[in-house]
Length: 461
Image 1: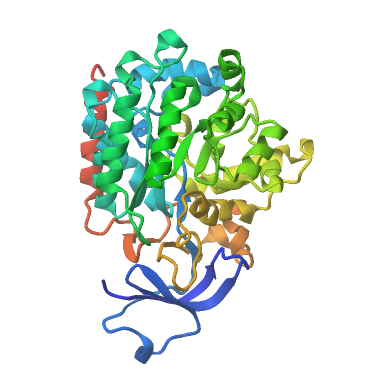
Image 2: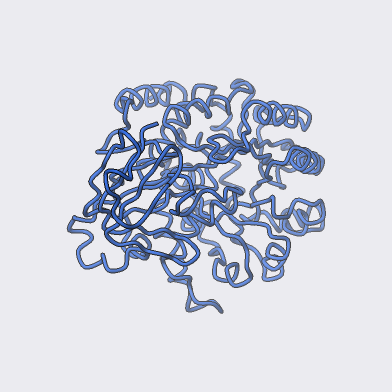
């Protein structure tokens, strides 16, 4: 791999522990990692055949890390009859799961192409996808196809092998076509870990064990998931605190966080998605057990019930990352947008909370170092020598940035970045530049995906 020099960057926002910002600096990338940031390098200091990119006028940031998504939902979005503003979460699940159960194997591949491409365009370099939908007609190689899509783009990809095991007759929202047995689930988790999981530094593929949510799974499913993950040294993930806690209390006598604690599904190797309905005691439990939270701000706007208590979590010491969530509840795959929407939502409710809203740059750090922490990837999330060369660049010589360049750390959270970035690099490889995916035909990818959507989701239109 040829070394790359990003020459004369206007600003380099490192997101390191000291919140260092370099001005008028060079970044030298050699292989998958950053070798140097700072003073100008002479030609004699560069590896042979170094490719130089003129970065004048550009701000450089660490690549964003998406800690919760459902790629397959790109095939089911922008539906007026699935309006969250008129439905509870449980009602919404009841209505949308039958649509999910109709998808075939190719649907998951093409939906992953759409999600990964959009993520990369907006500066995301590592994506975790929680794949819990295994319709019987789609088979068991759905996640294999997602790894195929990630490799096509060069995305650093973490998968969460999910499942739903509790039938509707026992109180879940799951159609029979989407149900699996605990035995099926565990067996496929083992296969995926054996086939794809890579613990090496700078690895591009990792696997987590991720039963969908306590309300839709047997207790034994979670217990066996815990045993497998801790035996194999992989992470655990699930949905918690998104409107189901009272239902689970009625069923088991415990709200969801207490139920998870009771079976051991909390800890430094666990992170949970959403968590907007937590009590103060439940937040303290997550902090004490070092359990992480993937905050997904966009669905909170749609549900409109409770705003995720991010300031209270931060004050308690809960580990926090950002997530896009599925396109059926967000309608896009743009983690960049979540930085600003997360900040603006907390600023809106801050007067009624006991804690001030985190500053805008905190949401950038949730989306970078916070995500790296949740995924146990210490080599990601900051721009420092020795860290992975995962980054994105913004050309700030545009009218929308006039007057804002004195504070690049807060720029994304306050102003927002609404167009694709100018360059995205993953593991030292440029995967998006000048409005193109190098080596890929975006128009062809779009045509193939859209044709499949129309065939599978809208066959009667």
